[in-house]
Length: 264
Image (cartoon, rainbow, N blue to C red; front, side, top):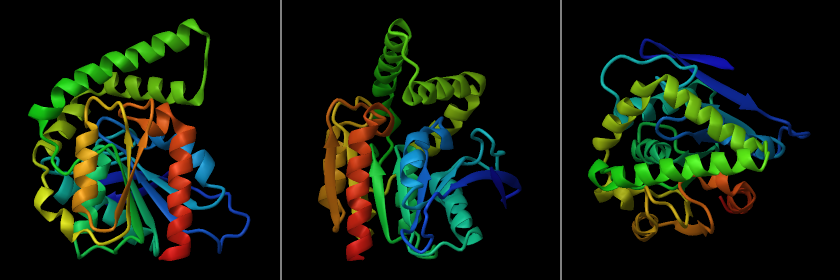
């Protein structure tokens, strides 16, 4: 773990790089969603650190990162934390990957022309407008499904990395309930629906086909509105395809990163 000082707080970030040839590949920065942490990307870190410099972050108020001053905000808060990290590490030709609220952070980042432009972005189970009145029922359904997954794994005696990630996420949320409340407040203010056409970098939209929180239609709206975008659905996955169906997810992301390497 490394520390970045930003807006009166210590922001934790993590680097992993197992490349034999450090001149090959490019940096990939993963941004977690609401009530989450860098740990949600554990499976991806393990895979992509062999070919890329992989960087994950705990956004302020999450896991090892302290709270910043002021009200939680995606555009003026979290996106600026990612920008500060990019500057701190002097990243060039990097790719941003964001899940759920993290996808909103990535969109807010790329729409801010003052920030260093990424080479490409990947948006995972996210939407341009995080309207709580539409998403709250899905949160309840997803919580029940997540509990069922944990129970099923326990009864079958399974101990997979995915299950450990799910359990760690639940423990963090239970120990810090204010974290999710802050995130939901930040999400309620987020809406870039009218600005999606301004996103000019290549964009991959990956979406769990069975997501009850951010339904598939939202992903299709992103794909229609973002000029240089493509969309891929992960069958059998809900809101966290990178954890629930990591093999399929990683194949899709690897294809995109390989395409970016050859075509941008």
